[in-house]
Every structure is written in C-alpha cells, then in structure tokens.
Image (cartoon, rainbow, N blue to C red; front, side, top):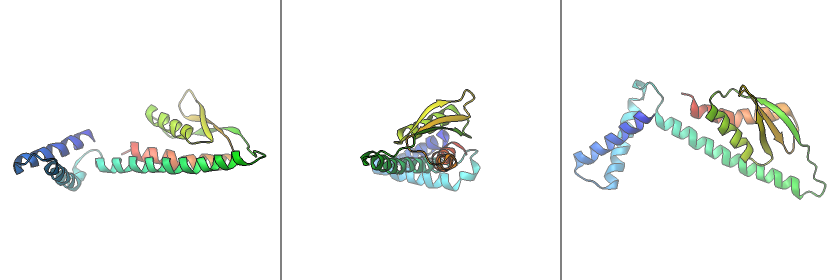
Length: 159
C-alpha cells in the first residue's frame, strides 16, 4: 500500500515537471492520472489497490458514526423513562481478529458506543468480555457486533 501511494505521488510530481507547471492544481491532475494508471495496473501488484483499503476505512468510519448516533438515542430513551427498565449483563464474545491493533480497534469501537464497555480481553486474545447496559439476547448481541464492527475491521485489514 505504501509503495502504491509513493508511486502515485511520484507520477504526480513527474506530471508537474513534464507540464512545467508547479501549481497545486497540476499536482492534483497528475495525482488523478497516477490514480487511473495504478487502477489499470492493480492486478500486477501483490497487495490490493490502496484506494480499496481507503474506501473500507471510510465505510468503517461511517458505520461507527451511524452506530454511535443510534446507540445514543437508545441510551437516551432508556434513561429518560422514570422506571429505568435496564437489564445489564456481561457476556463473552469470541473474535476472529488476530492482530493486536485489530482487537484494540474493535474494543475501542465497542467501548465508544454508548451502552457497551469492553471490560476484559482473554489472555489468548480470542474472547472479549463486554458489559451491556440493556441486554436482551446473547446471540443477537454477538451477531450485531460481528456483522458490523468486526466485519468492517476485517475488510480494512485483510487483502
């Protein structure tokens, strides 16, 4: 990925020198030309096209923001009720993520979402222990996390 970005910048700088124009707009045009060239040659690289990974990061960010807003409304709905009908629980969620940064990112995204907190990670980094403010079904909670955050992190990290 870093090689592709560096190559794209090199193509943009070459375009600037060939055009004999050193304006930012010339660099942007050269960058877009380089992007098109790298896209056409994407099969010849050993790693995936870097814009695919960038798009996956954008999707993960938008997913987190959507979940953040929805969770805020859910927690707000719970706390403004006079009886506070919460069902707190702690559950274990097995994860397929392997790298430390992936597990840390998943834990952070879960913790930053209101109503849930990752309280511990197993020694083998295969299980997250999560506290939920309003718990209904263990399978539903695990599937929800797996189909949103874990899937998006895998899309960012895997080629």
